[in-house]
Every structure is written in structure tokens, then in C-alpha cells.
Length: 228
Length: 228
Image 1 (cartoon, rainbow over the protein chains, first blue to last red):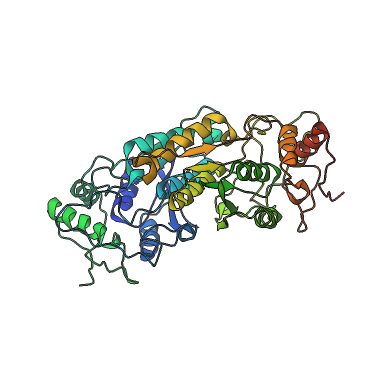
Image 2 (cartoon, chains in turn blue, purple; image 1 turned 180 degrees about the horizontal axis):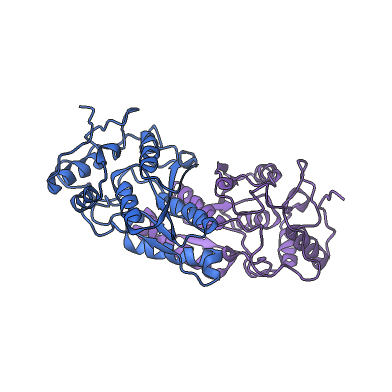
């Protein structure tokens, strides 16, 4: 079986990606990051999801992105903003953007893929509900794929590394629909930027907002446990 | 003053880059990685060099590349190969190649640059003595620069991020000559992949081999302290 490295945050999107990749018949190597995120519970969710999915391996890499700062997700001095209820998502690049996060995560996925002899990396970025994150855009992914092919032994030896983004053109509702058909239990996943230590969601941040709307539009009951 | 992020390993090349960048009049932010390298002494060298150069800041990010494995530099089960005395450097990609290392390092430099408001990242890669590392080639750097401009707020807002590689076309002898003119004390730098806890070099690995030849060709005395 071909090996795939799957970035798994423990959120709704990456859990759907994992289910999709497993359905396609890859041997899945799930990769998570303990990067100083305030919503640390997602790592417990990722571990449970990876175990239940019986992945070939689940690796959690520690990496102190808080040392760099500059994001509401890693800096305790910057508050997680509440979703702007007047528009679908806030305009511009939000405070929850973590500088260069997807570049860093993809780089480490690339390193692991190279060691595993895998040529396929999957990431659950989404350009529809991408919330203004520059590193969720298709042209960013294309540029990174070029780096992946130039940076590695595999590339030098003529093998093609591919960065797969199966969710990139889907709405949140379509993602939920796809995952539900594949048996994903979304109650296990955590999207909230401010989830408490038991994984309960705040219901007020951008991530909660997009998730709630997604379930509404998909016509499925929202299994998220909210704080209020 | 413009801010520059300078990757500083504590080796000969990156120390020369730091001297060059400071001479150009940037405010320097030095970045090192504690990535599980066996030649950990280089971090002590980097700290001393950064302090002496009076950089604006020196950050050491911890990052467990050994968790990924696949390199003689991070995996205790893979021995550091001795230089092939019959050729200048071994052919192909050596065992000391760390999968995706420069991609990972540049990604984190990019994140820090973004937080600092810097548009200039400096890395001491070299395509002459590059020892077969795919991520030291000019086309890799060009591809990464494209990623840097697509991944970040700065790029989205029309500012240009630049990955500078001032040593890329220099021989080791030219690098040593340049640094010496700028007052670099190469006795402080550590290139050896197997340096001991006091920074003494093995004299036998590829890195030692290239360094020794560099001093010979530059016509300068080699200030390296060797084990044997």
C-alpha cells in the first residue's frame, strides 16, 4: 500500500481528510503538532481519532511557535476574537492567523514523508471558508509543492511529491456531508480556538461560527458540546 | 534600520553571513535551532557569536527533528561518515542530509520575520561545496522565496519577502577570506558533525574536510581545535 502523511489537528477538516485518505486505500501516517496552541485539547482529540482510525502511526511533534508569537492562538496576551456576527467571516487576515504555520507544518510533513518513502502529503486547507489565512490558498499550496520537489531526495531522484488538498474547494457543509458518509464522528473533533480542558467549545469564535453554520447548512444535527 | 532574520548555526558559513549582514547595516535577529543534532556544541558557539556580534536578538527554537529520523546528524544509530579522501566531497546525497531541514528552518525564519515586520531572511547555503544537499540549490531557494511571498501577510499586502543567500556562489576559501576581512574569528565557529562537548572537531567528516581545505586554499592558518 502507498503511504500517505496526513496532517491531523483533531479538528473537523483534518479528520475528514483522514477518513477520505483511508477510504482511498493509503496507509496513513498522521502528524500533529504541539505548537503552544491555547486550544491544546485538540491534541487529545487527534490522538483518539488516530487510534480509532487505526492509522499506521501517529506522531506528535513538539514545536514552540509561541516563541515566535504574533498570534491569538499562541500568545496569551492576544485575545481570541469573537466572530463578527454581521458577516460570514471577518475581512482581512484575522488575529488567529499563526505566522507561517502551514509552511512550517508542511515542511515537517515533508521531512517525515521523505523518511517514510511517501510521496503523498494531505492537508485539510480550504479556500472557501479559509477565513483570510494566506497559507490556505491554492497558489500557496502549488508553490509549496514545487519546494517539496526541489527540497528532497525523492525530487532529485525524479519521484513526484504531491501536496493533496481534497477539501480546498468544498464548503463546510460539503465537508461535513462527505465525512458523515464516511462515518466520521464529528462529536470527537474540536474546532474551537478556545476549547476548555474537556474540549467544550466557546460557540463564539470564528472557528465555532463556521462550524455551526456548516452543520446547519448540511442539515445535520451539530454534535459539538458547547460551554454555554 | 531594516530588520534581517539571519539563520545562525554557529558554523563557519552562517557566522560569515551574520558578519556580512551586519556590515550591510541591518538590525540582525539571529535564529538557531536545537533540533536534536548530535553536534549540539554548535548552539553554544552560536550563542557566543550572537552575543559578541551584539545582535538585536538571538532566538533558539527547540524542534525535535530526531523524531522524524532519517539522518546521521540526528539518529544515533546512523554513524557520521568519514570524508571520502579520494574525492572532494562524496557523490550523491550524503547520510548527513537531514530531511527537509532547510525548508523547516526557512519556514520558522519566515514566521519570525513576519512577526518582526522583517522582509529579509539570510541563509548561508552554498551551491559550490553543497555536498549534495538538494535544499542548498539556487532553484530550491527561488521556490521557497515564492512560498514566502504567498504564505504571509506581508506578501498578501504587496511587500516583498526576500531569501538572501550571499554565499551561494562562493568557494569555502572565498567565504573564509570574506569573513576574515570582516573580522570573523573562525576559532569560535564549529563545523564538525561530531564535535565533542568542548567543540573540538573530529577532522574526518565531510564538514571538517571541506573546512580544512577551505583554510588551505584561502592561505590562512586553520584555527580549528581538532581532537587528534
